[in-house]
Every structure is written in structure tokens, then in C-alpha cells.
Amino acid sequence: METHSLKELYGKDFYLWVQENLKLLREKRYDLVDWENLLEEIEGMGRGLFIAMLRQMREIMEGLYKWENFKNHPERDEWVEEVSRARRELEDLFEDSPSLKAIAQDKETLQKAWKLSVRALAAWLRLPQNKALVVSHFKGKLPTEKDFPQECPYNFQQVMEYKPWLTQSSLE
Image (cartoon, rainbow, N blue to C red; front, top):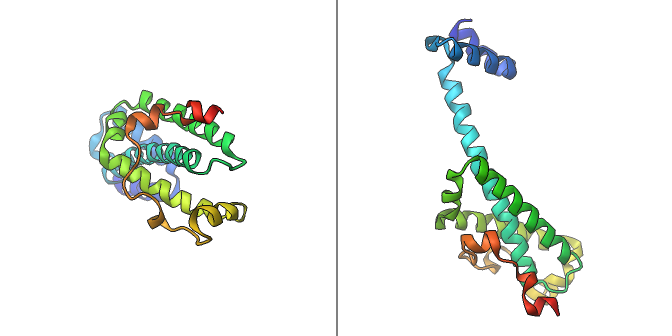
């Protein structure tokens, strides 16, 4: 298959495009590979793993923040399950891609995940069932991202291990 038609195939039949490129690579016919699109796809795979990691970190931070700050919410036990599930998924990601663990520990990555958490928290508080929380914690004003800590309140170890629901005061 010619490079020109392989590039056309990329937009028409992605699966076949993958199979054709794999075949060319196995045959070491590198001059026929659709390198431009192949490199984009590889880059996208890495970006996808990074985003998946950030989403799990966001889920954990969001659950920890809710647990610490909204003590009388009826969904409190569900947050524990969400944090536990997100931690397991994050561990799975680290097992498959160990280099992500070092990236996750970086202060900048923690801050990115926290920013996503803050957005999610603000959106969650806009839901009608959370009106009482808005009244009690934000004086009835719908919170914005500015109403939450600007710096990430959790370090990597806390993201992976902190269980505020196991402290003595939370057991009472």
C-alpha cells in the first residue's frame, strides 16, 4: 500500500490503518509507514495515560476534600468507596506504566489534579441536592473555584494513603 493511500485510510478506516502500519513495521518497510499520523497516535496514547492518571487523582482529592469538609452529607460513605476505587485504578496505572508514578508525585501534577478537583467540587455544589451545603458552608452563595484552597492541600502520600475516615474523631 502506498504512503499516500495509507494517509487517506487513516481518516476512513482507523482499524485497517493500524493493521497496515503494523504489517509494514513488522516487515521493516519503514519508508511506507504513515509516520506523521503514527507519531500523533503514539503521542495521544501517552497523553491519554497522563489524563487518566489526573482523573483518578482528581477523584481521590475530591473525595478527601468532601469527607473533611461536608461531614453531615448523606453520600459520605460513597466518597470512601470512590476514593478506594480511584486509588486501585491509579495503582493499576502505575503498575502498567511505572514512570507515571514519578510524574504523579511532582508538585505541578498534584496542582493540576487539584485544579480539576476544585472545578468538580464547584460543579457538584451547584447540584440542587447540595443546596443545604451551599447555605451552611458558603452563606448561600454558589461557590466558585476561588472559594477553595488555591494550593493543593494534599501531597502524593496523602493521595495514595490518607484515610480520614479511620481517624478516631470520624469513628465516633
